[in-house]
Image 1: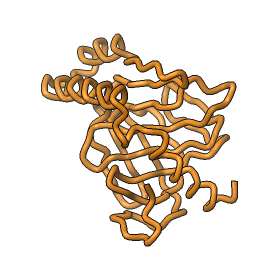
Image 2 (image 1 turned 60 degrees about the horizontal axis):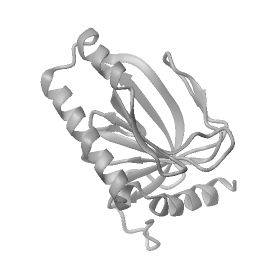
Image 3 (image 1 turned 120 degrees about the vertical axis):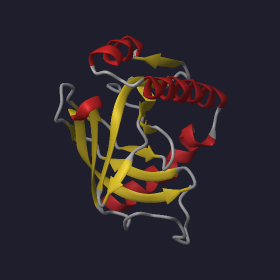
Amino acid sequence: MPDPAGRSAARLPAGHPVRGRYTKWGGLRHHGADLVYLGADEHGDWLGDPAGNSWSGGPKEFTSVTDNVLLVPRDRGLTAMFYQAHPEQEFELYVDITTVPVWDGDLVTAVDLDLDVIRHFDGTVLVDDEDEFAEHRVSLGYPDEVCAGAVSECDRVVSEVRGGAPHFAMATAEPWLAVFRDLTGR
């Protein structure tokens, strides 16, 4: 939950533009977007992703259909996007299994390791892109320790999402969505 007294380990001031960029192993481009820094809490840094935002730069391009918030943990190999209900939006939580995100000023980068944990609005949880992970493990040459770490993190995330861990709860993300809306007047 946002700290109303402003006591956090925030990297940047709230409202500061940031760039989020995902690559594939070996530095291959994947996708990225312009985002808004919202603040930080015990779960990590929170970024705003406005409706109409274009995620581009790689083979998969898409446009955000709702205002969303992205959690970037400080010490885990993942990012977690929380989505709002919308007829065009299939899921409420999308966790990308990645390398530990790295900040460089107002740029945050991570290597996407294919595995995704998705929670649909009806509560169904699934792991996506296991086939892509198996293919890229060979074609992109993922080291064995990277593979083991990605599978371990994916299993942990599935357990946490199914178990209702606070950092994957919509109730944790909603105050950050309110911060985003206050900052942008949306």
